[in-house]
Amino acid sequence: AQKVTQAQTEISVVEKEDVTLDCVYETRDTTYYLFWYKQPPSGELVFLIRRNSFDEQNEISGRYSWNFQKSTSSFNFTITASQVVDSAVYFCALPVANAGGTSYGKLTFGQGTILTVHP
Amino acid sequence: NAGVTQTPKFRILKIGQSMTLQCTQDMNHNYMYWYRQDPGMGLKLIYYSVGAGITDKGEVPNGYNVSRSTTEDFPLRLELAAPSQTSVYFCASSYPGQGSTEAFFGQGTRLTVV
Image (cartoon, rainbow over all chains, first blue to last red; front, top):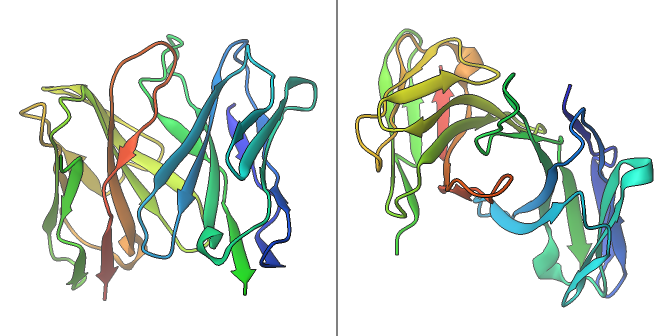
């Protein structure tokens, strides 16, 4: 079954610290995508990244970087030099396929990690 | 471009009452979804639709109904509200593409059943 585990329930850091959010997943699929979403205090969900299982290269976008390791089924997210505006709940997600093998974009989410960045 | 719009943003229902959560998107996306988010939990899929006239159950469909008469609209109906349905509800949409494409979410509806 498809499953996403975010073992860190809450993380608290001081501004400018680096922080890594862990995501471990289980899937029967040989090819798949993984997602990260951010939920700021205002409540909406904001898409951050989509990665294909074919591509294990690290992705960097400004202060954000993602480390995808198929061997350990992990897709970790690092924020460098954290800022107060990074305070949010972060979700890792994995598509869930029907019996026919098509997900139609349906996602299973991890429980989320609450990140608090203190000034 | 409005994206995905949900109404209302907040609602308090009494046990046994009914209501419809509205969702509309202006991106011409085929796929639409309803998720619920309970405190401290990730989102769980209630229902989804792959196009007008086609809907299917997700992980937690009991107590809910949906319809999809147009590409734009995907309302979620609660027939007999129960305290267990107290949650934040998110509507989302996405477009068909290679693999799974990113979903665009509405701002959520916070529902309390008392």
